[in-house]
Image (cartoon, rainbow, N blue to C red; front, side, top):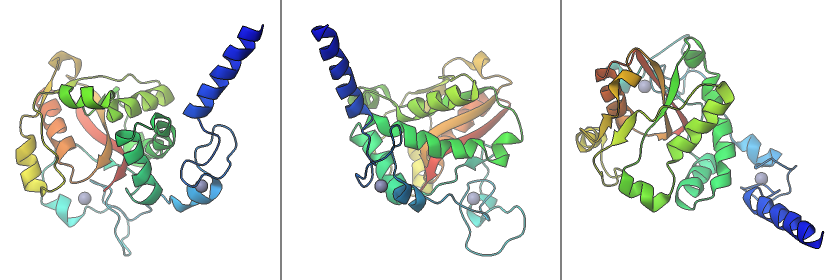
Length: 243
Ligand SMILES: [Zn+2]
Ligand SMILES: [Zn+2]
């Protein structure tokens, strides 16, 4: 009995560590299962229209109906749209970093909640999809990090929608950090960085490509390009946030 109680306490202690009952941003007490208090949650405002139909870049100004930003007008993409309703700022940016680099794994839940807003977007709802495809990490980076953040998020989206995760892509080239490169340089750096594992699995499929952040779009574009060459019927992108 005492051992049983001790085990129970240990289990609760561990759960408490995994799911601290306080706001992950400011430390205020929160109801069990909540990772953000009402005040911090309120600071995270979804991007509201107008925003670019292609890349979700918000636009300050009055535009009636759909529009495509200047950047997207001059680019040909292999994905139909990159959908996110949050900017990578403040708490959103902080949680993405803490999740990825500080291994605060429980933060996958608030990140998944923000990502799920994209699933409700008209651009996703308009057409059914067959599977989620996470942007892969290179094996070396995977070993360093122990998990692929895109795959973790894709699994949570799969659970919510009852659709499978298809690990259709493999990262075959180790690419150095892209933060200092512009879009052209990033595209060049990523050229042939990915390949499709098994083309028949994606042929004729409507896919949702999943990544944590959309910055210039060069990573998801390169993934979409190889998926499209392999015969995917359509590719849309969802991310937690955009840079
Ligand atoms: Zn808070
Ligand atoms: Zn755009």
